[in-house]
Length: 279
Image (cartoon, rainbow, N blue to C red; front, side, top):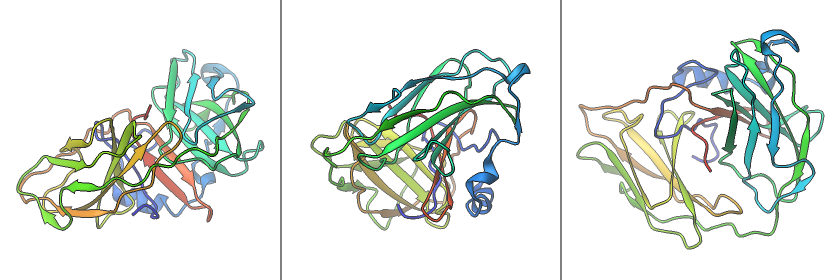
Protein backbone atom coordinates (compact mmCIF):
# COMPACT_ATOMS: atom_id res chain seq x y z
CA UNK A 1 0.00 0.00 0.00
CA UNK A 2 2.87 2.42 0.67
CA UNK A 3 4.10 2.25 -2.94
CA UNK A 4 0.78 3.15 -4.55
CA UNK A 5 -0.46 6.52 -5.71
CA UNK A 6 -2.35 7.64 -2.62
CA UNK A 7 -4.32 10.42 -1.10
CA UNK A 8 -4.21 10.78 2.65
CA UNK A 9 -6.70 12.62 4.83
CA UNK A 10 -6.89 13.34 8.55
CA UNK A 11 -9.50 11.50 10.57
CA UNK A 12 -11.08 14.63 12.02
CA UNK A 13 -12.21 16.23 8.76
CA UNK A 14 -13.43 15.31 5.28
CA UNK A 15 -11.79 15.06 1.91
CA UNK A 16 -11.19 18.07 -0.36
CA UNK A 17 -9.12 18.96 -3.42
CA UNK A 18 -8.50 22.54 -4.59
CA UNK A 19 -11.29 23.80 -2.38
CA UNK A 20 -13.98 21.38 -3.62
CA UNK A 21 -15.25 18.04 -2.41
CA UNK A 22 -13.95 15.17 -4.50
CA UNK A 23 -14.46 11.44 -4.60
CA UNK A 24 -12.28 8.54 -5.68
CA UNK A 25 -13.18 8.88 -9.37
CA UNK A 26 -11.74 12.40 -9.56
CA UNK A 27 -8.49 11.27 -7.97
CA UNK A 28 -8.08 8.39 -10.41
CA UNK A 29 -8.15 10.83 -13.30
CA UNK A 30 -5.93 13.35 -11.52
CA UNK A 31 -3.32 10.74 -10.67
CA UNK A 32 -2.41 10.41 -14.34
CA UNK A 33 -1.60 14.11 -14.67
CA UNK A 34 1.67 15.92 -14.11
CA UNK A 35 2.47 18.80 -11.80
CA UNK A 36 1.97 21.45 -14.50
CA UNK A 37 -1.68 20.48 -14.81
CA UNK A 38 -2.20 21.89 -11.33
CA UNK A 39 -0.25 25.13 -11.70
CA UNK A 40 -2.19 28.37 -11.09
CA UNK A 41 -3.66 29.84 -14.26
CA UNK A 42 -3.44 33.62 -13.82
CA UNK A 43 -0.57 35.51 -12.19
CA UNK A 44 -1.44 38.87 -10.64
CA UNK A 45 1.14 40.94 -8.76
CA UNK A 46 -1.22 43.83 -7.98
CA UNK A 47 -4.81 44.33 -6.91
CA UNK A 48 -6.70 42.18 -4.42
CA UNK A 49 -4.28 39.21 -4.61
CA UNK A 50 -0.96 41.05 -4.20
CA UNK A 51 0.05 40.06 -0.64
CA UNK A 52 3.43 38.29 -0.45
CA UNK A 53 3.70 35.56 2.23
CA UNK A 54 6.64 35.68 4.63
CA UNK A 55 8.64 32.51 5.17
CA UNK A 56 9.59 31.75 8.78
CA UNK A 57 11.00 28.21 9.09
CA UNK A 58 13.11 26.39 7.93
CA UNK A 59 15.35 29.43 7.87
CA UNK A 60 17.26 30.42 4.76
CA UNK A 61 20.57 28.52 4.62
CA UNK A 62 19.74 26.40 7.67
CA UNK A 63 21.10 22.90 8.22
CA UNK A 64 18.47 20.81 9.97
CA UNK A 65 18.66 17.74 12.18
CA UNK A 66 15.46 16.19 10.81
CA UNK A 67 13.93 14.71 7.67
CA UNK A 68 10.42 15.94 8.54
CA UNK A 69 10.66 19.64 9.42
CA UNK A 70 7.67 21.77 10.32
CA UNK A 71 7.23 24.53 7.73
CA UNK A 72 6.08 27.86 9.17
CA UNK A 73 4.96 31.04 7.40
CA UNK A 74 2.94 34.23 7.74
CA UNK A 75 0.38 34.59 4.93
CA UNK A 76 -0.58 38.15 5.87
CA UNK A 77 -4.15 39.42 6.04
CA UNK A 78 -5.41 39.42 2.44
CA UNK A 79 -9.17 39.02 2.71
CA UNK A 80 -9.42 37.73 -0.87
CA UNK A 81 -6.94 34.87 -0.44
CA UNK A 82 -8.46 31.40 -0.36
CA UNK A 83 -5.32 29.23 -0.31
CA UNK A 84 -1.70 29.54 0.68
CA UNK A 85 0.51 27.41 -1.54
CA UNK A 86 4.05 26.18 -0.92
CA UNK A 87 6.45 24.50 -3.33
CA UNK A 88 9.40 22.44 -2.15
CA UNK A 89 12.05 21.53 -4.76
CA UNK A 90 15.62 20.32 -5.08
CA UNK A 91 16.50 23.10 -7.54
CA UNK A 92 16.11 26.89 -7.17
CA UNK A 93 14.37 27.12 -10.53
CA UNK A 94 11.48 24.96 -9.27
CA UNK A 95 11.45 22.86 -12.43
CA UNK A 96 10.25 19.76 -10.61
CA UNK A 97 8.64 20.06 -7.17
CA UNK A 98 9.05 17.37 -4.56
CA UNK A 99 6.10 18.54 -2.45
CA UNK A 100 3.42 21.12 -3.14
CA UNK A 101 1.06 22.24 -0.36
CA UNK A 102 -2.39 23.84 -0.65
CA UNK A 103 -3.29 25.22 2.76
CA UNK A 104 -6.50 26.90 3.86
CA UNK A 105 -6.96 29.24 5.61
CA UNK A 106 -4.77 31.72 3.75
CA UNK A 107 -4.47 34.38 6.45
CA UNK A 108 -2.06 34.77 9.35
CA UNK A 109 0.63 32.40 10.57
CA UNK A 110 0.47 28.69 9.82
CA UNK A 111 2.55 25.55 9.94
CA UNK A 112 2.58 22.13 8.35
CA UNK A 113 4.65 18.95 8.45
CA UNK A 114 4.68 16.67 5.42
CA UNK A 115 4.17 13.03 6.44
CA UNK A 116 6.96 11.67 4.23
CA UNK A 117 10.70 11.81 4.90
CA UNK A 118 12.95 14.09 2.87
CA UNK A 119 16.17 12.67 1.48
CA UNK A 120 19.01 12.96 4.04
CA UNK A 121 21.76 15.59 3.66
CA UNK A 122 19.99 17.17 0.68
CA UNK A 123 19.50 20.84 -0.14
CA UNK A 124 15.89 21.89 -0.77
CA UNK A 125 14.37 25.17 -1.91
CA UNK A 126 10.95 26.46 -0.92
CA UNK A 127 8.66 29.38 -1.66
CA UNK A 128 5.05 30.38 -1.05
CA UNK A 129 2.27 32.36 -2.67
CA UNK A 130 -1.42 33.08 -2.23
CA UNK A 131 -4.27 32.05 -4.48
CA UNK A 132 -7.47 34.09 -4.69
CA UNK A 133 -10.36 32.08 -6.04
CA UNK A 134 -9.66 29.17 -8.37
CA UNK A 135 -7.30 30.75 -10.91
CA UNK A 136 -5.67 33.95 -9.60
CA UNK A 137 -2.14 33.64 -8.21
CA UNK A 138 -0.40 36.28 -6.14
CA UNK A 139 3.33 37.04 -6.24
CA UNK A 140 5.91 34.55 -4.98
CA UNK A 141 7.70 34.95 -1.68
CA UNK A 142 11.47 34.95 -1.47
CA UNK A 143 13.09 31.59 -2.22
CA UNK A 144 14.74 30.05 0.82
CA UNK A 145 16.95 26.98 1.00
CA UNK A 146 17.83 24.50 3.72
CA UNK A 147 19.68 21.21 4.03
CA UNK A 148 17.95 18.19 5.55
CA UNK A 149 19.47 16.25 8.41
CA UNK A 150 21.30 12.95 8.33
CA UNK A 151 22.54 10.21 10.60
CA UNK A 152 19.50 10.01 12.87
CA UNK A 153 17.54 6.97 13.96
CA UNK A 154 14.76 5.55 11.79
CA UNK A 155 12.35 3.79 14.12
CA UNK A 156 11.29 0.18 13.45
CA UNK A 157 7.75 -0.68 12.33
CA UNK A 158 5.00 -0.91 14.94
CA UNK A 159 3.30 -4.24 15.63
CA UNK A 160 -0.42 -4.13 14.82
CA UNK A 161 -2.96 -5.50 17.30
CA UNK A 162 -6.51 -4.80 16.10
CA UNK A 163 -8.52 -4.94 13.87
CA UNK A 164 -7.05 -8.38 13.28
CA UNK A 165 -5.94 -9.11 9.76
CA UNK A 166 -8.80 -10.62 7.76
CA UNK A 167 -11.41 -9.95 10.44
CA UNK A 168 -14.98 -8.68 10.01
CA UNK A 169 -16.03 -6.06 12.54
CA UNK A 170 -19.20 -6.57 14.58
CA UNK A 171 -19.97 -2.84 14.70
CA UNK A 172 -18.62 0.67 14.15
CA UNK A 173 -16.67 2.76 15.09
CA UNK A 174 -13.33 1.23 14.20
CA UNK A 175 -10.61 1.20 16.86
CA UNK A 176 -7.07 0.82 15.56
CA UNK A 177 -4.56 -0.45 18.09
CA UNK A 178 -0.84 -1.27 17.95
CA UNK A 179 2.07 -1.87 20.29
CA UNK A 180 4.30 1.04 21.33
CA UNK A 181 7.66 1.66 19.68
CA UNK A 182 10.53 2.73 21.95
CA UNK A 183 11.53 6.30 21.09
CA UNK A 184 8.29 7.23 19.31
CA UNK A 185 6.72 10.62 20.04
CA UNK A 186 3.80 10.23 17.66
CA UNK A 187 2.16 7.70 15.35
CA UNK A 188 0.45 8.01 11.99
CA UNK A 189 -2.29 5.44 11.44
CA UNK A 190 -3.46 5.14 7.83
CA UNK A 191 -6.35 3.32 6.21
CA UNK A 192 -7.83 2.94 2.72
CA UNK A 193 -10.52 1.01 0.92
CA UNK A 194 -8.90 -2.12 -0.51
CA UNK A 195 -10.64 -1.47 -3.83
CA UNK A 196 -9.73 2.24 -3.89
CA UNK A 197 -5.98 2.57 -3.26
CA UNK A 198 -5.83 6.17 -4.55
CA UNK A 199 -7.64 7.42 -1.47
CA UNK A 200 -5.92 6.95 1.85
CA UNK A 201 -6.84 8.56 5.18
CA UNK A 202 -4.64 9.15 8.19
CA UNK A 203 -4.70 10.35 11.76
CA UNK A 204 -1.83 11.50 13.98
CA UNK A 205 -1.99 10.28 17.58
CA UNK A 206 0.38 10.29 20.53
CA UNK A 207 -0.92 7.06 22.04
CA UNK A 208 -1.24 3.56 20.61
CA UNK A 209 -4.87 3.53 19.53
CA UNK A 210 -7.25 5.61 17.47
CA UNK A 211 -11.03 5.29 17.20
CA UNK A 212 -12.76 6.63 14.11
CA UNK A 213 -16.01 6.46 12.16
CA UNK A 214 -14.79 9.01 9.65
CA UNK A 215 -14.77 7.92 5.99
CA UNK A 216 -15.68 4.35 6.94
CA UNK A 217 -18.31 2.72 4.71
CA UNK A 218 -20.42 -0.30 5.57
CA UNK A 219 -19.72 -3.76 4.11
CA UNK A 220 -16.34 -2.60 2.83
CA UNK A 221 -12.85 -4.08 3.10
CA UNK A 222 -10.11 -1.70 4.28
CA UNK A 223 -6.35 -1.88 4.60
CA UNK A 224 -4.47 -0.17 7.43
CA UNK A 225 -0.94 0.32 8.72
CA UNK A 226 0.98 2.51 11.17
CA UNK A 227 4.24 4.49 11.21
CA UNK A 228 5.98 5.73 14.35
CA UNK A 229 7.70 9.12 14.35
CA UNK A 230 10.57 10.58 16.34
CA UNK A 231 12.11 14.04 16.03
CA UNK A 232 14.36 12.86 13.21
CA UNK A 233 12.09 11.01 10.80
CA UNK A 234 9.08 8.90 10.03
CA UNK A 235 9.77 5.30 10.98
CA UNK A 236 9.37 2.18 8.91
CA UNK A 237 5.75 1.23 8.15
CA UNK A 238 4.13 -1.70 9.87
CA UNK A 239 2.70 -4.66 8.03
CA UNK A 240 -0.53 -3.89 6.17
CA UNK A 241 -3.62 -5.61 7.55
CA UNK A 242 -7.18 -5.84 6.23
CA UNK A 243 -10.59 -5.72 7.93
CA UNK A 244 -14.17 -5.62 6.68
CA UNK A 245 -16.89 -3.39 8.12
CA UNK A 246 -20.38 -4.67 8.94
CA UNK A 247 -23.39 -3.91 6.76
CA UNK A 248 -25.88 -1.21 7.61
CA UNK A 249 -23.89 1.80 8.86
CA UNK A 250 -21.41 4.28 7.43
CA UNK A 251 -19.84 7.59 8.40
CA UNK A 252 -18.16 10.26 6.27
CA UNK A 253 -16.50 13.60 6.95
CA UNK A 254 -17.59 17.06 5.87
CA UNK A 255 -14.60 17.96 3.69
CA UNK A 256 -14.52 21.63 4.67
CA UNK A 257 -11.23 23.50 4.88
CA UNK A 258 -8.86 20.56 4.60
CA UNK A 259 -5.18 21.19 3.72
CA UNK A 260 -3.92 18.96 0.94
CA UNK A 261 -0.60 18.39 -0.75
CA UNK A 262 1.00 16.81 -3.75
CA UNK A 263 4.12 14.72 -4.11
CA UNK A 264 5.81 14.29 -7.48
CA UNK A 265 7.37 10.84 -7.81
CA UNK A 266 10.38 9.85 -9.92
CA UNK A 267 8.14 9.00 -12.88
CA UNK A 268 6.58 12.49 -12.74
CA UNK A 269 3.32 11.02 -11.49
CA UNK A 270 1.26 13.20 -9.15
CA UNK A 271 0.56 11.63 -5.74
CA UNK A 272 -2.16 13.26 -3.63
CA UNK A 273 -2.30 13.62 0.13
CA UNK A 274 -4.71 15.61 2.29
CA UNK A 275 -5.05 16.25 5.97
CA UNK A 276 -4.63 18.47 8.96
CA UNK A 277 -1.07 19.51 9.76
CA UNK A 278 1.06 17.18 11.82
CA UNK A 279 3.20 18.94 14.42
